[in-house]
Length: 93
Image (cartoon, rainbow, N blue to C red; front, side, top):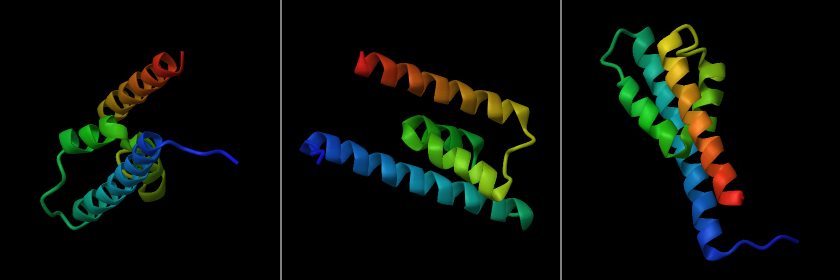
């Protein structure tokens, strides 16, 4: 089988956690939007995505149908994902 180093295990655990927290935060923001409560800032959502939660963000956008009509949000999220892809490319190269 495939064995991970302690560092790789820590990175994987962090990525799972940040994606889970990002997904939940998008859900909370959607609920607040529906109930006209004070919202989670877009900056917070972008930072969480930038820190590795972009998969959770995309899944949440699809699941909760949240931030799907706001083009400016989608553009910045797309840039975050492109940056992450480039980073992964250069790490693996």
